[in-house]
Amino acid sequence: MPIVHCQPLPSGELPADAVAAFHRDGVLVVDGFKSRAECERLRERANALVAEHGPRAAGTIFSTRAPQHLDSRYFMESATGIGVFFEEEAFDADGKLAYPLPLAVNKLGHAMHDLDPVFSAFSKGPALQAISASLGVAQPRVMQSMYIFKQPGIGGEVVCHQDSTYLYTEPMSVIGYWFAIDDAHRGNGCLGGVPGEHRKGLKKLFHRKADGTLATDELDAAIEWDMSALEWLEVPAGTLIVFSGCFPHLSEANRSAQARHAYTLHAVDAACAYPADNWLQRPADFPARGFV
Image (cartoon, rainbow, N blue to C red; front, side, top):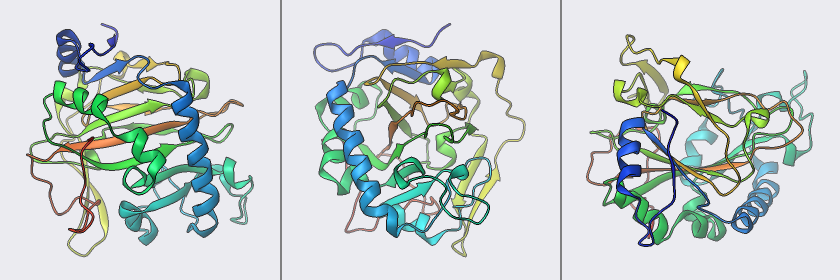
C-alpha cells in the first residue's frame, strides 16, 4: 500500500484515517504544509548562518557511512548551538576545502529552532502543535533541528537507519518532522523509507558512555528490514513528511546539478523518560520547548 498523503482538517488536526495510516506505516506525507516563500526564507537564513558560523567550524565531516564526528567536542557542543558540518567529499587529498563554503556544507545543527528567530518561526506554531496532538503527543518537546543541504554533485548518501537510534525515550516517542525546502526527487536524493517496518522495534542505539565517549550498540541483530518494500518519497517544496523514530529511511547520494535542501525537527513526548545517556542533553537553563 503506498505511503498516505493528506492535508490537515480546518481545525489543524489530521484526519482520522491519516492518523491510522501513520501508526500503521510509521510515516505520513502532509501536502502543502509550508509555502514556497517560507521555504525560501529559511534557505536564505541557512546560507547566512553558514557564512557566519562556517569559518569558525572545526572541519567536522558528517557521514552516516563513516561517522567521523561522533567523538568530536564540536559535535557535542552543537547540541546547544549552531554547528556547521561538511560533506564527506568537500575536501581534497590535502584536507583542504575543494568547494566554496556555501557548496561544501552537509548540515547545520542542532539548536537553530531555539536560537535563531527565522528558524524558530518556521519550527513553531499551532499547525505543528495540532499535528503533534493528532498523533497522540500532548507534551511535545523539540530536542533538535537539522538543516540538510544535500549539495549538488557531492551530497552524501544517508544509509538506512532509524532516528530513535540517535535520540530516544522510554517508552519510545520520537517523531521526525521533515520539510522539503527544495523539490525532492530520485535525481537529487529524496527520502526513501520502508513503511510498516517501524513495528519491528529499534535495531541499534547510539549513546553516551560513562566515560563521555559515544558508541553505537546493536540492540536486536535479528531485525532485518524488508527493503523490497522501499518507497521513494518524491515531493515538492513545502511538503512535510512526519515519521516515527523507528521508521527505517535513507537517501541516496546527490550526483545531480540540483541541491536538495531539507529541514528536520525531532520532538519527544515530555511524559516519557529521557535517559541521561542520550548524546544530546539540554542544561537546566536551556530546556527543550514545544511547538507553541
